[in-house]
Length: 210
Image 1: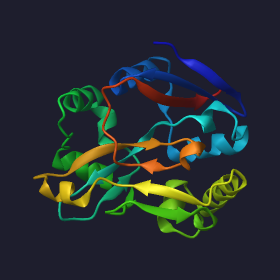
Image 2: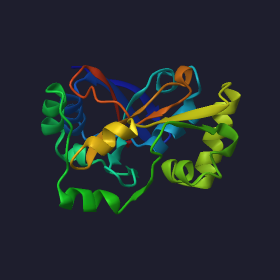
Image 3: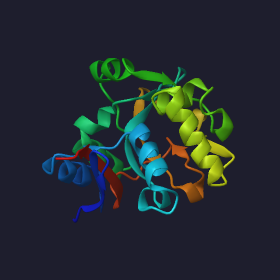
Image 4: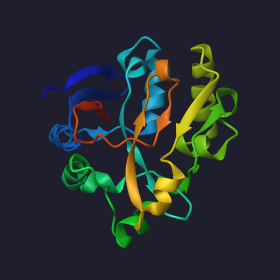
């Protein structure tokens, strides 16, 4: 498992690696990196352009969706999976969901926002006026800048995907799905429907430059 450092400037360093979720997260932490957030990821895309690796490829990010049966789905800033990555990856390999405890749910909800129950698209010229994307990219200015970047890249709408609500409502307890931030060729989709933690996939890490 090899970390590829492709960004080392402007006060930060970023690496990307390919591995199952738990292994990738462990490797990042061993090298003092944290898994990247959506806001950090979008900012790097703006800074390094649409032809850089950070824009041409998708990756796991810090955020996740808490799906609540017959309730309100929530996009959470700090995924409960991050503290239980091995367990979540193992459950995923078995085809099972990761069900957080009540305490983990309470902690995650402290920094969260409502997430749609069905897949939608948000026009890129409205990222700074939609509560979901303003929260996601940590401010109106960041959301506006990313929207303008996407427009310049030929993207008119950013998809927001969700697990089928009928499936969600059949679950007995809330469950979590990690966010996959798709590349520009896939319209920079926020994919909150994926499982696949157990397969080899891309994770990006970030840390302050030494």
